[in-house]
Structures are given as structure tokens and as C-alpha cells.
Length: 205
Image (cartoon, rainbow, N blue to C red; front, side, top):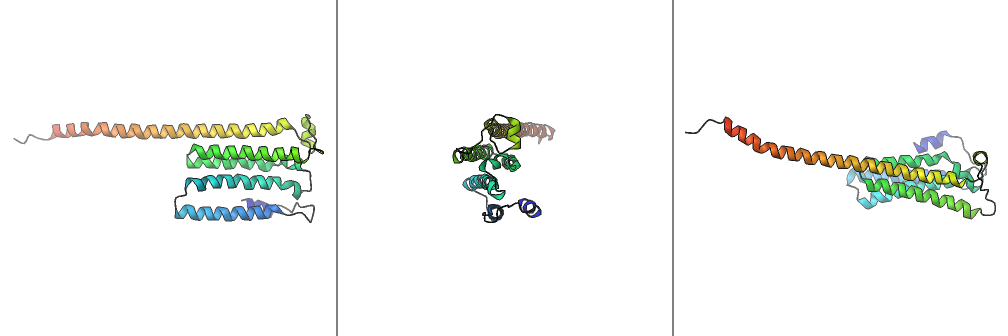
């Protein structure tokens, strides 16, 4: 999907001598996904490899977002407004398909940490030219930075992660309870079935 979207969009590079990171990132992600699919169909993936996959997904997305300021020839604060950040929620929700809370928490934690790091990178790398504002209109219409806006994004990532983790935890607990109750019901029904069968059998004398 990412390759299709990139191929369909017109080239956005305004400076010819910039390194085009996005194609390399997409190719790397494609190769990594292919290897992951191959291993998944051949073997049961170990937990460390799944955790590595989570970190790789988020890291490649963060590097892609970071590269946008080069791609469009803008200051670093430009990439903080990239809508590509919304893909983070796809990667977090994707981990819910494994029905294990730890991978959801890992994806959310790495996402929040990654966004915090690239946000702090903007502040410290452009400390002399950084335009920090409290005006929301100026934040939306210029390359200025609204600290509260970036904190909102981090809070949203953490809250979505927490809600998904809670939902999966409760669903897994309900599933386990249903299995236990089903086994208990079948266990209790066996003596009753044997008793009923014995009562129906004619006497042997």
C-alpha cells in the first residue's frame, strides 16, 4: 500500500541534491515484511522476533516522517505536522490481532518514545531558529511549534494504547473463563450421563 501511494503521488523533492530517503525506507520495509512473512509460514515466530518487528515498523515510520523536511526543503519543525503520524495508530491496532497485550503496549510505548524523540530533536537542533508559539492559528499556518499540540499527540497515542490493551486483556480473560466453564460443565455432565445410562440398562439377573 505504501509503495502504491508513493508511486502514484508526484515527486515532492524541491531540492535536487537532497538524499531521497523515502524510496530506500519503503524498499527496506518491503524486504523486511517479505522475510517476516516467509518465516511466519515456515516456522512459529519467536517472541523476540515479533518484538523486533514492532520496533522496526515504528522506527521506519518515524524515519519516514523525519525525512519530510528534506523532501520539501523545509525547516525541521515542518515534519511535526505530517499526517503520516496517523499510521502509528494502524501499527498499534495491528498488534491486537495477536491477542497479546504485551505487543500492544510495546507498539504504543515505542511510538510515544519515537515521537517524543523527534519532537525533542526539533527543539534542540533548531534552538536558535525555533518558533515556539501559543497561538493555534499561527501553529497551523506556519512552521511554528505548539508544545501543547505535540503533547496532545503523545497523550492520544498513550490513551489509544491503554484502551486497546484493556480491551484485549478483558476479551482474553473472558475467553479463558468461557473455556474453563465449558470444561467444567462437560466434566460435571459425564457422571450424570453415566448414571442415566446405568438406570436405563436392564438388570443382568
